Image (cartoon, rainbow, N blue to C red; front, top):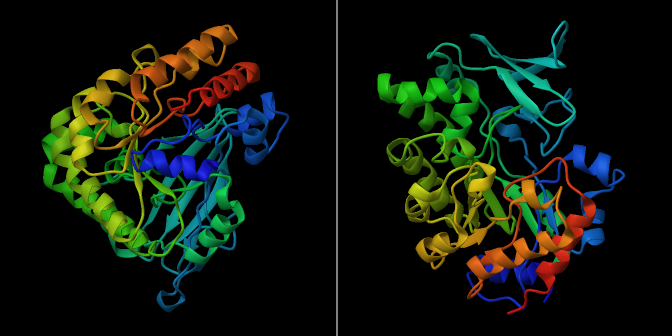
Length: 384
């Protein structure tokens, strides 16, 4: 089988020739420090994994006054930003901070909203939230751009990649910094602690906020019809059971993300629901939202709570399972034999009958390339 065929078999909960093996986002820090700055495609060839092309492209709707932001240079996992004369994003460096800091101003006719992003050599994070007053969501509702998929660009990438592997994208998220699930986007913009408290103190406002973000994602997904993605990612770690309660998930996450999955399917797209963190109490809630796949099945030793064998029994006949490998303990400071043993453990726990893709539980920054190579080599030996 080709890697693409192998992925699609697993996503359809069928049995491929062998265990598909891949990784989540490859971090620039890891690629520069450990892989001599090679490209993603070169990494997959070097390691012998089943490749993924992460691809994101938006197209402006000129009839609505949209255009590509002339000042934006897309960064890691970004598409070209879409602007209008009533929704413009300006960036400026903030001096005197412990970490390099950029202030992003979202300029509208009524109000300018601001968000600060800080970075170090590993990653970036939000240090000042965009939503500072509850009425700020009305500015997003009135002026925020509803991004649309550039189907032609996606299909060109799918043609380029061919049978080499999977073309994977992200359900649209908020400009500058966001996540693909409705709840997750809201958590980034308002702060997860404040958002949790608001579900008790002002639940109507939380639902209003989630509906605004949902409408933006709905527009994107409806525009994905005809795009030759193999998989789109939804969800996000702020919906994990180590962050929020199952009650909050049931009442504030599932109602919106279930509709997201339905709209994606109507557009002919497959969806993986990404939950980096705890999953065990919400396995069936996630499966009830009808995604095609679930990830990341983070094990307990990494701060999650997933047991692959238990998860396979509960949801393995309903979704493809992706992840479950402990990259923290088996991509560094261990022997290749221990890494290989962990691969076999994952395969024995979740591989029966297919419908499983071996993958680290989310991304990683530091790793021993020889252990990564052992990971891939052992997985290729796991044949059906």
